[in-house]
Length: 218
Image (tube, rainbow, N blue to C red):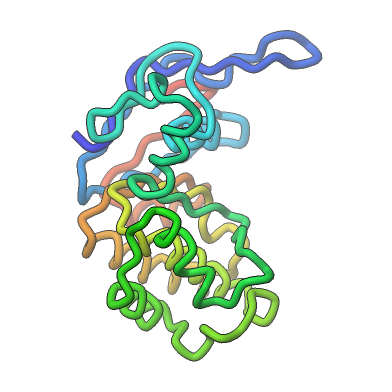
């Protein structure tokens, strides 16, 4: 099992008192599988994705990736997990404006010590970015920047890809095109894909679907 989450709880303190965002969530994902996580705003989707990505830790329950318990790791351990084993694609592209497209794509893989020039060239070509590599992020369209973000995430060949509304800022046609390439590349690498989305059409393209409602799987 690549990813396993069991009885995951997360509560945050608010001005009105404790707010339970996640109230006992279970899910699992095998390598090579894709899973869509849907639900209304505030249902806990992004919180769950952040916990799985090691950006936070659950108050209760267990999350394991390749058998490693995230909650048992320190901050450095979770950061190391995100550098190589887990790749995250955010709705906001989070590209580094002072770096060229080529450097942005290579950044994560070099940080993880997993840079493979042949694979990066293949990603760049498949994502239609070969003619853009000498440019800077501000010179690219939103769709192109999201392709760069996907290339950067896939460059270290992560075992698990987490995507939080990865096409939320794109028009329908561009979103479909970006998803075509991302699903194809994830399948080729044998990675697992967990994607948060509000789109029923995008969710239907993945292998399985889970719906969150008020912090629980509905």
